[in-house]
Image (cartoon, rainbow, N blue to C red):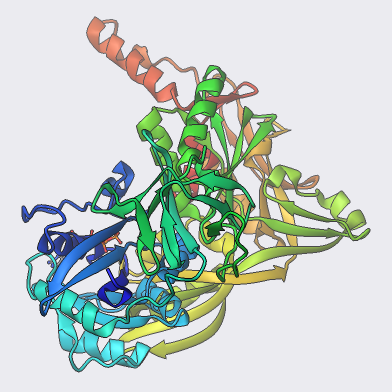
Length: 600
Ligand code: GTP
């Protein structure tokens, strides 16, 4: 295929606006998959993705299409839709020349539509707006057109209006891609350069990498080098995804395809890396930055005998997801475990769910923390990812010169009737308003600068509940900022539980301290002795609750009568214990560590 007959494009959209459904329709239209009319969602490979209906791992598919008598090779590069993966989104976009900006005609533009638009716009891509779901009775295409014009200044005169589900106007999509998106540039005669923009672990062939070929040719048998790690690899297979791996023997400038090169783990595949031939020097492709974990949590086996098994399973899962960072950790309260770093909270939840689904793991996850920067008076520097490592009050006042926390720029879009409630929410989360504008007569877009720590816990749930589900939200990196941070400890029967410590802004300690003892009281069951729950800042107690002793005898209610009922109750009690962890002589459920945060 000459470059002018190739198009590399992606679909960007807010979650649920129909990206996967449209991709399915395009694959059917080009006979890349057989048409059945059902929602197969070939692009969403993982079970969790199907369950949650979100795209986590990008998948790319090559299609063949005849337009006005010419054959075209169209590469649809899938991008993850969620904010946690914005670095991966920008890398996938770097492999395209254009993108379809898909907007739900009933919902209108949402926070991720805006965030994705700016990522694509910043990369200089041709952006084709498309209205989807025009079959819905609630669709308001004219209104959404005005939003697109006012927010993005895009020309909507000949905008595509489609329904991916009801297959309306799907045949107009690819002609528009071919006519509006420019073909890839790059020369086949130059030395080979490839951009690595995705990778995954395949149980038969090992690590598979997706490359966008910027210049030159890559053939099976070639020797290549990673510009990032300087590691050498032998290319054992090259090909295109159609929709599964289809070996082609070579790839040339302008194409997008996969390579297999004997990598042992996905951690060797750095998204954004440049590959070149051994012995050649080339200019490295721009924009590479290693994925940064921004949310950290401790993971511990409920039963210490499961440690090895869990260790194996975490290794297997991280083989497929190089963006999870893993370090062993020991907690006084929970024993041996790991501190895992994730790109964001959704990423963390998906990982935990996969661990539980695919490996049947019984685990305790601690409250997520963000990385804090500490500069000491002797100029040394530390990044703290675990509250247990955060200096206590005394060390803080003697040794610490500066404490900093990561910030984000948050975008919220919602109907204006929720304005009061959302301004209040952002205010209590230490947010500072940067901007607010109307995107149409009744929809508002607000921008806030706020601490990442405030958005990683239950912000999203609160946002949804205060806006009856109508507010959408996204954020981008906002750098680090000085902050008056302290560590709050939790004491059970006067003993601190390290796994429950949390880093807070000083102004929040009283409120959170009082709240936590109440919530903990709500999730810890009464036992045969009194349990005192305290929160403390250094030696100063902030709040205290007591759970009074109870003589626990669940079978007493049965009046000795029905034996099978008694067995059932005992069984139920046993199951209830599965997720309990003994801290000293107090039993703590998983909810005490993390889940209770979102049960407000
Ligand atoms: P993520 O993978 O989470 O980013 O979502 P997505 O954008 O890929 O959305 P998906 O294709 O999974 O569609 C979300 C929901 O909208 C599904 O229930 C689809 O069946 C439905 N849907 C998609 N397109 C249309 C459409 O044109 N009309 C109607 N009525 N529903 C649609």
